[in-house]
Image: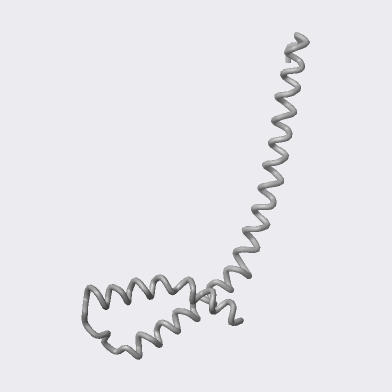
Length: 99
């Protein structure tokens, strides 16, 4: 795991840590029980999130990109064929040809 991946996961996890910490400080107003386990758990969540994102990038994202490319090609072909059909229909109509 590269440090850039871990730091990206840390940036993703930071808002959750801030909200939970703020809730603990301002609402609960009690010391965190077993603070060391909370820190260890946060580090494990950070590493788990990083591994999860690596798995998505190597597996699902590549499949999604190929599906998006195939859909874009199909959509382009359908659009061109539809435009050609409408243009042919209008040209035939202007010349009073029944289709």
